[in-house]
Amino acid sequence: MRLISVNEQINTSNTTICKLIEQYTPDERGFLSQNILSHLRTFVEAVVVKAAGETNYNYEIFQNKGKPYLSARGHLKFLRLFHRSLQKTVSHYLPTEENSERLMLKYYEYLLKIKNFLQSNYQFEVLQNISSFPIHSDPALDESPQVF
Image (cartoon, rainbow, N blue to C red; front, side):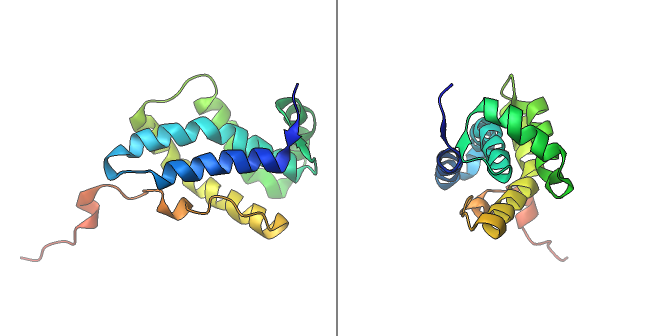
């Protein structure tokens, strides 16, 4: 199985996610969410491998070193929960656009935690434009209430 550096894998996934967010148009949040979801599991697994102190990445390293490390660290519970959820929701099929939107809204908090975790522990900058992800896209919610 081919090895790449864990930083390279994180950067590759991060670049793709950021490009997707950058290209977002207001009427395509479901499509955007679907595409981001397809990259999240590899991104999270690479973050776990980095947290375990490994410098190389592939799925075998994640299984043999990352996962056991994750299970033994309470402060990384958010990564364990996020990965478990990704395994259930995006492992073997791609959710519909509507379901993808819901998942991304749920996963947004996890992504912020990963961003902060990598920044504070490794000075590793990721998800630079995550704040541009459209978490509020219902125009009815943007309008101020009218007073009669």
